[in-house]
Image 1 (tube, rainbow over the protein chains, first blue to last red):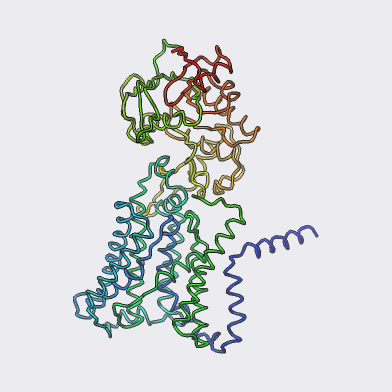
Image 2 (image 1 turned 120 degrees about the vertical axis):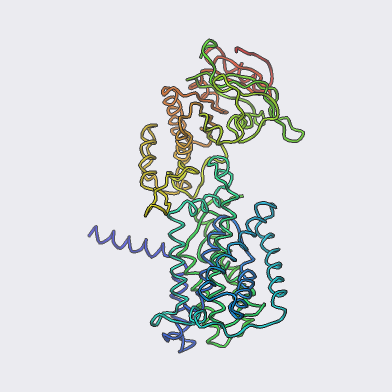
Length: 327
Length: 256
């Protein structure tokens, strides 16, 4: 009798503590099939995982940035810049496909590091610093491309974006691996620990812990940049080409996913699992909108509203849990 | 404890300004091995600033600091902890979202290497060390793996003090308002803890607003008033009235 009651209690606790997005997804999977018969097809489901892959890779980096109480609005422009430079190199043969992976990671690391350095050395708030670099990197991309469009890239790069392992899209395999590594770094390394600690109480890290906060902050943005680089390579593979307007509005999508997943804009609280759910939920919503015939601009309206709603919801939940708002 | 034994720390004519505000003016005092000294003063009297000058969180504008008779420049909290000074800060002691071992080892995490190269946090050893440390100072916290934001005020304070203790061979502990925002029972635990630390032979400089606490632990009392020393008195040869008078600026006394 007694044990039965406690197991029901346990089950109730489990259900109560499930991530809110789990319920959101259950709701979507109940409702969307009524609107479109194609939604549940394996082909369509695999399409969703392919589409969300690049968002997921960058969102893992953004989870680190936001956990450290930062923000990076430059990720879309960074992605476009790397994509264009590398696509050009692949096209004219100066960058062999095998080397391109190192090029994108290296470029991303440096471009991200610049964001971190502008924030820590010039002492500009992350929001403003990354908006400035968002415009700068986008401008550089347009200067580099001069209105040109690149198409038809080498086979291995196209496979990276369009290939599959059995039924599972290759980008999904890469992105889930990166998510797993992201979770592991958070939990088991000094870098992960300091990301949380800096977001939670930067002054304590500096004074009590003697941590070189600026160096770690810069490293967090560089890490994010490296992931953006990987995303860029998969993106040009998937599209089999690129232009200077690639990934516009990408940053909003990524930030919305991370915040929906429960990583706190107040810093210090992160959830890689939540980020995966956030990315996937937005992917399902977008897919559903495409299936029912909503156009691109309607999709942007929905993403914008989702971003606002998820931040409002996060604030509500934190107040309800009695977590003091940090100043 | 007496003027005849050598001072552990001596501060001479130290001063610090923030813009036009002279937070600490011409302060001199000595701390001797194994004594508990209370630092008193009204809000804005310069207590926290003075502590931070000694712990390296702030840099003095003028004056000298001697450690065991030798002149030292405490340019950072790192330098302070290397020579044996550890401070518990009132306002920025803990990292809320990190657990107790994580806070105690903040900035000096133990690392183990897997495959001889990949450095990882050695959580197991840090947990063990934390349990030992908490047991030694007789602090009982059931679950040390929770983020410290979930702990009670007393448990948080105990964690902050334990963190200070963990600093290697800290001879001087500076505790800024260790009893602030605590329940009565928890206050008593912290007082007991201070006594335990004194028995271990450590020197303790404790900032407090509560005269009952001060009289129950302190050997000597330093009173600051508008950034300057208003009095340095033997805690056993004074009265509450005299101390209150010094705090509000109604007198001067120096036993040193």
